[in-house]
Image (cartoon, rainbow, N blue to C red; front, side, top):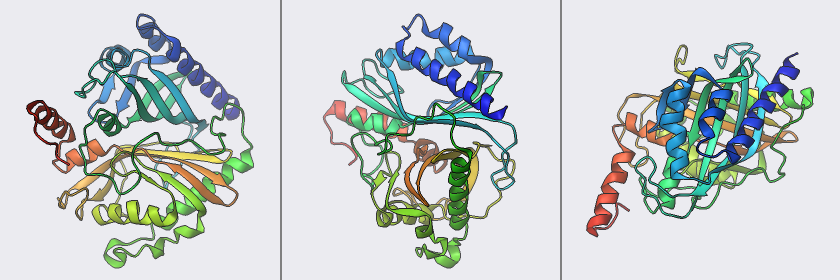
Length: 360
């Protein structure tokens, strides 16, 4: 029954996405009302944040987005689902029905959006989403959109240049096998989940006060393919080897946010840790993550307890993880550190109007 339910949920979301790609602005409200629960809990990365109810989702999110990008189309490259078995380790409830995916929205940037000036040019918006399904409709949404990348394509840089590679589109799976519309082999699915769980347990062996910049306690080479690729958001960038992953992301991140054993119970929302075939996904939303121990992105330590909005999609090849897509809401994270990246954008827009140079 759970397999049939998962397939039905995936079919419902996939059909919804295809219809969205072809809906006119006038057709959009009716389509959203048919696919979402009336009291849907719709959460988007900052500065949108939480929207409650389908009518507010229409008025406050979808209509402004479609007016800004009239020809907007969604092109996912990972699409999967599952019924969460529940986990004490990940604090997830059994029986929740999830559908998940990541990829791109693409459209001509015709009107300003979220304060970002329109360019009149084709713009790519990296997205990652988790849906909670109930009775065949979307009851909860957790959607990451890389707003900083949209800024960058419009000619604005709210953060210093990333250590990892930025610019262009984040690639999808090299094997082009991430759209899982059909039922997947249960043994392969379980194998993917177990590998990700083992990798995550390895990460928890790191102790900031003991290890500092030495990452060997996590033993991550046991889990990652020698040809691994890690794709982070604008502001972090992509890493094309395990060495780059450690140097460009892990060490700076752990210097800033090095807690691995704080209690997360009762904090925020945890996505189901789902495995389908060679793919696994999971995530957290407004979940207690770490104290801000050290400088990050040029911002001195605040000592505050940070919450995080962070998603992962992993691809397994054989006995190793080979690809990882990781949207992170850095706008939300940095505003907890008293840095408003949307205000930085506004200041850069004003400076440009005066003919003054940008921040970087």
